[in-house]
Amino acid sequence: MLELRHISQNYGDRVLLQDINLQVAAGEIVALLGPSGSGKSTLLSIVAGLQPPLKGGVWFDGQDITRLAPEQRHFALMFQDFALFPHLNVLDNVAFGLVEQRLPKPDARARAAQMLERFGLLGHARHQVWTLSGGEQQRVALARALITQPRALLLDEPFSALDAELRQGLREEFCQHIADAGMATLLVTHDEAEARAMAGRGVRLVAGQLRALW
Image (cartoon, rainbow, N blue to C red; front, top):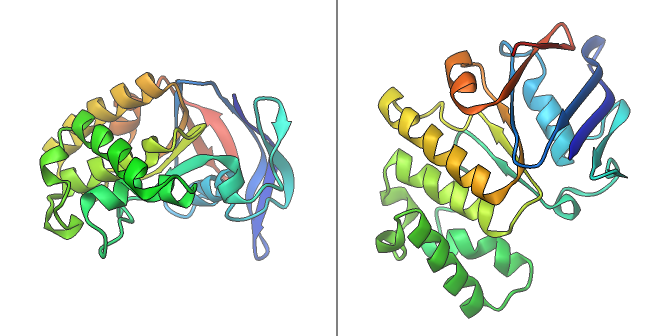
């Protein structure tokens, strides 16, 4: 269970987040909506450990992890621009997190190949990531996120750079992989149709506070 407890944050003199409380269960996708500048990405950064909250804390399975560094939280964060490494091929992009965890490179690559097979991308294993289509790159990004078996998945506008038809197919694919992995998932988006297609629950960030949508 991922929990946000009484989180507040300011941007200069402006109150950006005010007493935010939210729970996301294992295997659940919760959508966080709101206009640009409302604080959605800031809240996601606080959950990821990239910035501290002014007040409040982030908890996971009953433990306060607010002061833990990002790499100690074992969360995966996916951005709209994929954030793949252009100097690495597809296989080594997916294996990267395991290598960082000090798994021997041959073992990391073997597990990465298995993950790519799940995503139908094994044939692209030796290709450079910049030669792939947008949808293929996003699948590589998700495979890289899932291979380390993160405790939670944080998605920041993951499909905004893709065309509408591709987005629809990827939504279903992502939901299936997330359900299989049983991760607590927080989806940040400005697209309510996308949010309703993926998330069992949706909240909107308005004037620094959360309002339940469904």
